[in-house]
Amino acid sequence: MNIAMVLANAARAFADRPALCRGRETVHSYGAFLARSASLGTALRRRGLKSGARIGVFLSNRTEYFEILFGAWFAGLTVAPINAKLHAKELAYILDNCAASVLFTDIEGGLSQPGDVVDVDGDAYATMVSTPPDTLQPATAVPDDIAWLFYTSGTTGYPKGAMLTHRNLYAMTLSFLADIGPVEETDASLYPAPLSHGAGLLSLAHIVRGAANVVPESGGFSPDEIVDLINHYPGSSFFAAPTMVNRLVTSPAMEDTKVENLDHIFYGGAPMYLEDLKRALGLLGPRLWQAYGQGEAPCTISYLPPHMHLDTGDGRLDARLSSVGIPRTGVAVRVVDAEGRDLAPGEAGEVIVAGDVVMAGYWNNASATASALRDGWLWTGDVGTFDAHGFLSLKDRSKDVIISGGSNIYPREVEEVLLRHPAITEVSVIGRRHADWGEEVVAFVSATDPVTAEELDAFCIDNMARFKRPKIYRFLPSLPKSNYGKILKTELRALLASETAA
Image 1: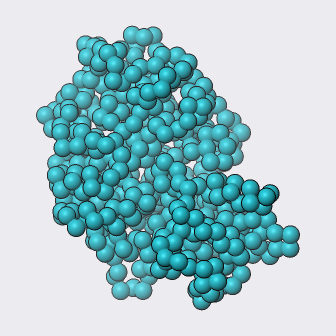
Image 2 (image 1 turned 90 degrees about the vertical axis):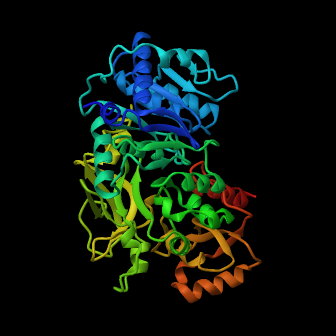
Image 3 (image 1 turned 60 degrees about the horizontal axis):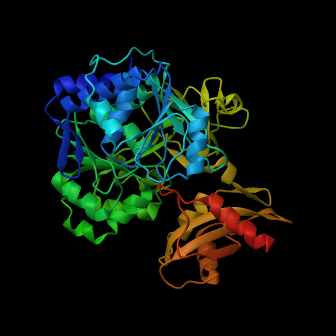
């Protein structure tokens, strides 16, 4: 079944409810949202596009994003949403890789791309969304048709397009409603995070229930603006990277927040460190949902719901908060060794995942698909452990594990300790080759107050095994981050390599 049916059904039940909002303004009802999407689908079909053709979406966050996603699906096409902050060369690579027929964009600067380019602010787009639709029913699609090409960040090379099928998107949505819901038509989903990634995927669960979908006027994240929207929309929620949660709870605007209007913050995409999480819980209460997922299993591997963020007196609160929770509904999760054998609780291995949410493979990349999908399981590349109670904790990406003197050192463990130091605001730990030990631990830190490497070394010795502590400290005003708030270890490795070469 075509995933566009979630909109077709919602529009019948909630035709007059606010669907797409810009800030406090309602832009379109569900009835209008359906009509404009169906019109766009009709216009795309009349351009000669056949089922399965790829549509590039290179947009900042705006209400038209939703129209384009559903318009393409109504026509039986595949969308390839692209991070709006990518370089023109990166954009060109993705468009060429997926052979996009049409690119929708609002990015100025003389884009020169193959196929048709539609300026979302231009007359051509206005005509497309006002074209009388042939039908308000989506095109026929089978569950394994590709609906969304989710391009990875490309931190280890060229980005790969994870093929997400209609089945995958339905499974993701149903799991959200089972584990994270309920969602009501009176609720509002805010979108300060990029719609090209997790925020856009998670919108499906809100559209199927007829909730309002609110794009901030800025198109991005500002604590003041988010607080204003929370205050305006009861039952509000939003997806956020941990850095966004930290910025919100440390903002002066928090003093004016009607916390009772906030249903939840769905956080994930990067580690949420224990001290940061406790600070957020102290201000927001049990309104935090943690999710662990990947583009290859969109937002849906494990979760930690609000009640598991609370102290029940069992002595395991810190362990729960440091974990990524328990497996999601409809998902099987294992921790295995290199041969695929299950490991006992407490033993670290690769996290593998199975279920209807797992991608069909990588677009035009058979070797990467064969490496990631084996015997029905997605090998995530993440190192984790289960505890005796079924909670999954992530150590690091397998490529980030530091092996020093034959011992495995997981950077996140070291980062967690360093973040307890009152002077440290950010930290990232990587490994560097060492002639005797194989690798040595290097910590990049950003501090609010003066602190020396000697002080940090003494702090680490007091809080962890000596062999895990950093041998080198590099102090930076702030650490480099991606557009989604992840610290870029690739840039830190490049900086360290340049220092070594010099």
